Length: 199
Image (cartoon, rainbow, N blue to C red; front, side, top):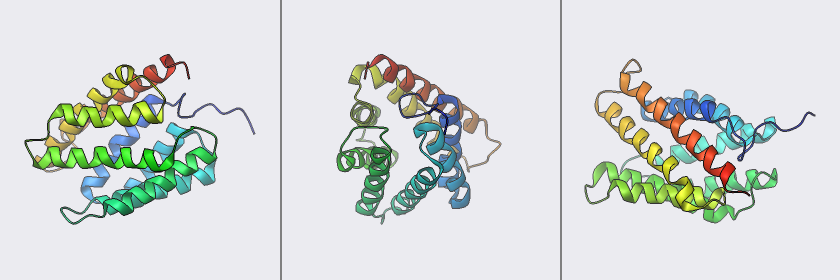
């Protein structure tokens, strides 16, 4: 087996951003087969695990998102449990050193804050940025200030996604292309932050 070329500290930011856009679009269209395909590609590009672990990890991400998707009656605890299993898989591969339970709490927390941001004007953009900064800083052992630009770009992508959903979820809508650019910018900024964190 050749040397590992991609991992959580050396991921392909363009590929991850593009595939995450595909996953977000599939999520809102409830096209779960397309979501799984995007998730496989996203996990492969983002974590660089072996084929089996990549497939299992992508399946766990899919099931977590399905548990989260219903509104308002979703299952946050199941989503956290599934994401805990995902992060446990990443740890077992030796890619990151973290507590999978805490990582899953932070992961699903930004999902919660985003949903509240969508439906409650009292939840601000800064709240959403802060939830992502907390996740990135913990998972990648990086300084919060370094990962903030990545969080801000990702929130921009969420706002574009929300506008795309309100406009009817057309795949030809220019908002989807703008979302893709924002997510690529977010992951590029995250990769830069991780490379500067010295860990």
